[in-house]
Length: 200
Image (cartoon, rainbow, N blue to C red; front, top):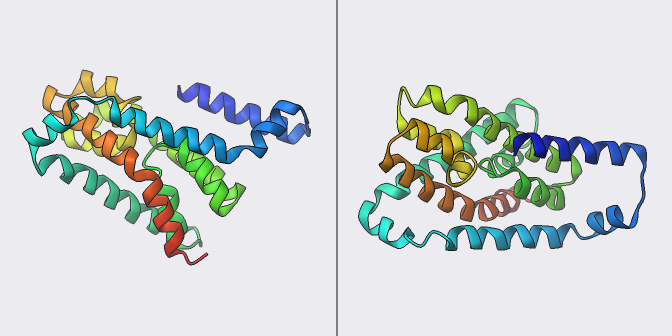
């Protein structure tokens, strides 16, 4: 999936640099909002597919919210710090980090809100988070299983879940799915919040 995403990115860059103009490319570029709505619809489907979500919430009580809150706060603070270190607004950095690893949604949303440059930064940053998770989860699992969930962010319910299954235990896998569902639901809210706080 990572390699397909990178392939799609470089293919898009090549098409844009070559100045290719076709009905398909024009339709895609002029209907970015529709693509965003489809992604949001997929969030609802993803969360809704977890039929045991309510049962797991009852079983783990407050514990299931501690990890996502930590992931969200850590990501926002790290993003704000990176924004300051790169000479940008801390709210811009936090908005980029608000993707929590969900590169497709973060890229399109921030492109619509803050322009192509910030959309590209959000896409690549969140793609790199997912990519680094694949390499770091086997190492982090030796230290702490919850650290694996934190590294994965919103991807802990889908693309990085096979690694969770392989390197952690059953309880961590359940918490991983719940964390991914909660983080995914909060991604658009967090991006909009950071954008609103930036005062643009």
